[in-house]
Length: 329
View 1 (cartoon, rainbow, N blue to C red):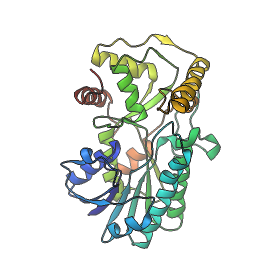
View 2: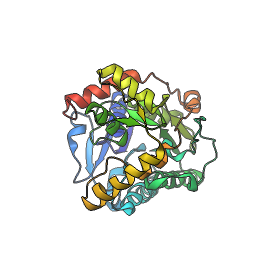
View 3: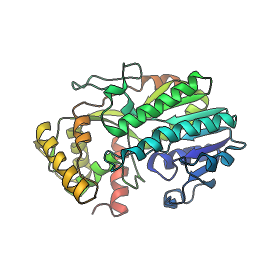
View 4: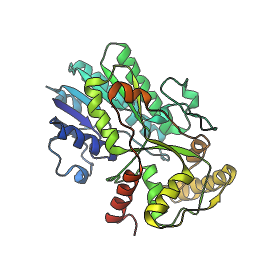
């Protein structure tokens, strides 16, 4: 099977590319002129230089392709120019779907996010059928991913074979940027995590997320969303597990959300707007943290053959990778 893959230079994209290659897929990897190719060294596949912002640069790469796997996304919880995020996540997805349709590509797998789901403050578990609207989306990242997902649903309703995957919070090696989740690990390893808030996440092994992309190519139902998750854990439980792996003390001080919001406000203004650097905490993160992002992967288990794996090995692998590559002592 010949597959056109976006996002291979990133964290999840690399693991998806590797999983597809191990299954014998012939890969054509989209890279931008400015892309750092270090993360795809050694991967079997051709590279195609192009940009989702320039559809004409993508069109030739879709000739003879059997499936498109669209993993690329702008994943940040703080951005000086939010319009750039919407152009990448929403417009880029729309244009790629259009190009795939025009090239008669039989199947498209789009990587969305569990961020497009509706969550609760009491820790109630959400699934793909939990009612949700754009008004539930906190911040530009969640809004842009929700709108991109709507483009996928529209294309599926129009007859295009589009499957939507919604990873929760992937962890594992090669989180090169790192992602906002990876920064939790890096800050903890550098002893910059003095306190915590009462929030929760669903952590998932990135290798299982990648395997689900392979499964979705043949088993996914067009127009369906599939949550790809692992363990539902409070932030304190996550920090305690990291402490058990590393020997670094887990923070014992829980701070109210009002205090966290005040800190984030000044971080955004001083570090973000005045100094022009990425703040360590944002109001968007605090607002998201008021709800525990607990989710069920039952649909993916039943329909795709997805496996819910313990996250402890993935946490250990992530920590070892960050330390080996100089992110932490």
